[in-house]
Length: 437
Image 1 (spheres, one colour):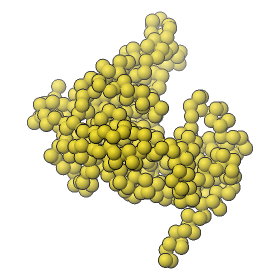
Image 2 (cartoon, one colour):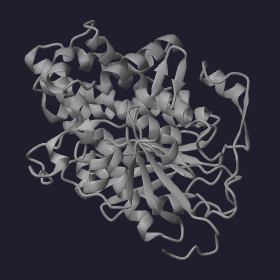
Image 3 (spheres, one colour):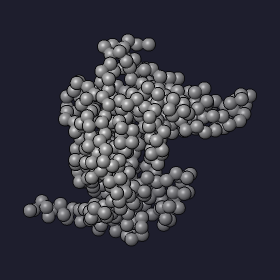
Image 4 (cartoon, helix red, strand yellow):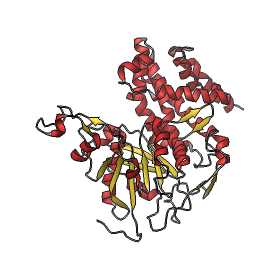
């Protein structure tokens, strides 16, 4: 056990979620807390939705004479015995300091840092279970890609978690295929954390945006104007992090997530980081459509270029004055892993790209490809395309986002993939006109 340094307490970390990406992040975090014993407690709790799992005969842990192999066992027991998530991340050893816990209240007990990594459809129910069981000054990081979009408004998962739990929540996103990170193949990610000023008098490192829009008391009336349907008419008062804990700033967050094989860059642009991880799935569908036509890499590159422009425009248009995040920065999309790198990865071989390509090449509806290829899982790109279109339609801005709108219309059968060049040409025409005025 390391020295506590100048602070009397250390941060306790809990990873909320245990799929392949959740387990991978738990591995990364556990390796780091072991190396920074002056800042973090050595044990990392990982909340696991309990299920029975029968160890397959091809597992390296299978032993026909062992009780653990003869019949289905609790997944948490298997993880804690073998130090491997045998179902969701098989073949990858994880540190023994990762403790799989099926009791969510026990898992988050006394945790000051909550890392959320679970399917977005479970966020609401999970936050209900957490309410009243977390320390009031806990801070969160959302690793959940996607966006809660409806005709009522557009909300980041980091904001949704923060509102539901009355805590501050940042975001982590990047070109991060879970299995590659777990195998310690080199990759990068972006962590967005804009520390509430009451948490620490220590400034964030030089070169990062210093001003934070956070206030010790956030007026949710303003929040509701941007996101109708949020908690009405209440003020959210963040509890400051006690001074006997090490400060939670950019330097601390880098120590929590950065590994030699997993490079982390910090930013204060929570909205931009979150949007990049969500909107790139729509662009990946468009890239898959043109690739399925056999048009080659030039066409795919053109679609990706327009896609980046529309991601930036979406962020600038709808998240320029978010009350819980720094203003969206163009550079987040053009320079960060969560933007251009994630887009490249998704448009090269991600599931949205692959299914869209097969749909066009085989002349089969994408829903049928989804059923055939994804074993019951759903494409995020199609649902995001529909949700974003409903939002843009309500705002009267469909024509301002021709690629996003084209993808929606192709999914609806209103346009054909062959029409993409004509449909996105308007964006360049408008830019050229603007450039001559």
